[in-house]
Structure formats: C-alpha cells, structure tokens
Amino acid sequence: MASSRTATKDIITLRGSAAIVSEFFGYSANSILYNRGVYPEESFVKVKKYGLPMLLTQDEGLKSFLATLTSQLSEWLESGKLQRVVLVIMSKATNEVLERWNFSIETDSEVVENGVSREKSDKEIMREIQAIMRQIASSITYLPCLDEPCVFDVLAYTDKDVQVPFTWMESDPKLIANPQMVKLHSFDTKIHKVNTLVSYKNDEWDEE
Image (cartoon, rainbow, N blue to C red; front, side, top):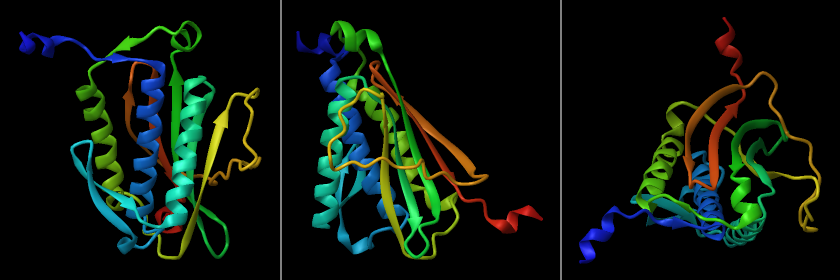
C-alpha cells in the first residue's frame, strides 16, 4: 500500500542538505534585493517556490553572480566549512553599510566526518523556510526605508583551511556601529541549521 509511506521521514544526505541550503540562499538573496529595492522591481519575475510566490531576477549579471555564489556555497556546505553568509547592503554614494542580512550555519560534524544521513520530512523543512521567506517579504514593515541608491556585497565566513576561489577577496566584516537587530526564524535540515538575523543602521531620530 502506497499510502503507508506518508509516515516515513525523508532521508537527508549531506549533499542533499547542501543543495537545500544553497538554493535557499539564492532565493533569499533574490527576495532581499527585490524587497529592499536594490534592483528595480521590473527586473524580477514571479515564480512559485516553497509554496509561495517568489521573485527571481532577470538581470543577467545578477543571475550569473548568484548562480556562481550558490554553487560555491554548496561546495563549502558539503565540506562542512561554511560558518556564515552575510548579504550586505550599502549606500552607492558613500559605501556606508545600511543593512547586514546574516545567515549563520551550524553543521552536524558527524555527518560530514562519517557520511551518515539524517531524517526529516521535506514538508517540515519547507514550512520552516516558508516562515523565513515571509519575514523577508514583510521586511518593509520593520526596516527603515532605504531611500537612496544601494549596492550589495556577499561575505562568506569559512574555516581557515578553505581554498578560496580567486573571485573572492579578503574583506573587512562591514559592520554597522550600534546596529538595531531583528532575529528571524531559523530552519534545520538536521544536518545544517541556518539562523537568520538582520541588523540595520539605527536611525538617529530614535534617540530622543
């Protein structure tokens, strides 16, 4: 009977988990760049993903940047070497850092070292990712307005012994002085746990 299968958990392998997490970064980055107005609205198209309407860029330069990024992140996730990824939004005119979207990653080292797999249902993982995507989509309600042209950068924090591709450069952490922070939901594949946090520049008006 096929229906009895519904009770079984889905098997999550290291490679499968790395694929889920790196794909999540790709969609998150698209969503952040769209919702924060870093790229023009009309350069995105609607697709359905995670049971939600999501937006994907049609900008060729950004598309190929994100494709390269997600495949590199996937490689680092598979080797258990990726600690965090930060998408930084800066003022185009001054390079001042306005927002840091911080995704920190906890990796189950036993899986990396011994090649074991874990069990968790795909539906459950999707529900957890859905909650984060909803928070990114509603970021306009809790983040200050970015009312100037902005650019973005991606920082990756990896273990020291990682071979870094030549397209990546050493960078300072691009921190914000005295930031405000909003912690978002996390999701867990049972191999990689991703915690999401956005920090942003504190508006001077709040200090009365």
